[in-house]
Image (cartoon, rainbow, N blue to C red; front, top):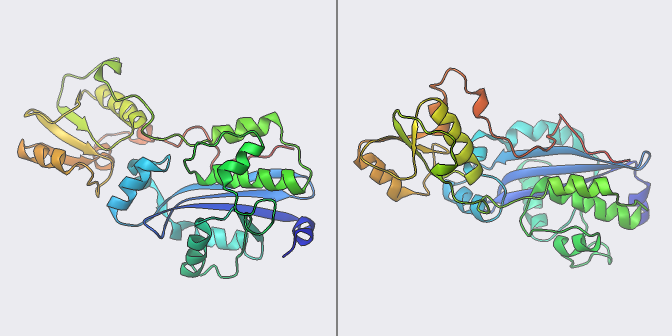
Length: 300
């Protein structure tokens, strides 16, 4: 499909997938462009449980994505969204930046029987972007790209690059504000968790949190102290619970073995929360950003 045909389309969809373990999908972001009202909308932004080996999730979460293992443990698998994506993208023109992701996308199109999807690789399809990385192209619009990856961010950025280049769209200040709100931050960038940062610490049974991001540790430690628990940063003989982000957590085998040696129970956070009367306050979302089906980005 040539550029003139693309520009005549009523709608264009820009998709980005983040993957883990070579095949599992862990994020999907989709941005739509309407030719008639000249609007961009973030129409899908979800964390996906990739259903791959836990060690693949651990490494990938820490080094690349702004997602923690706890978030993945709460996420639904791709199969949960399959019908929605198929029904909404079938017959549509879908563009993706390209690079190594395009091969994984094609594998997943076959794997999930989405063979009627017409996915166009943008950065090798037209000479304006041929061989250019998304981070480099982002700088041409004045965006600062961290080098980390986030599906919603990348789909929005791809859409902005395309419509500003080919559709005469003028990038506005609100575009910068919105997309910067999606700019992924590494879970390792925060300061180390400090007990002194807690306003109070309980006097009851002792618990230690392991495998969480700094933000999660601060939030969950604060809530656990409200329940009377005493937070520890390491295993000790008086420890009652070693709390992990998921049932498959395996990144701290030494700490897990030590906890069991001193008689502490190793329990995932979700199971611990089930013992509380009200668990709804323990939900951690991915910052204040619109989610699919509940919010959209639509600058005029």
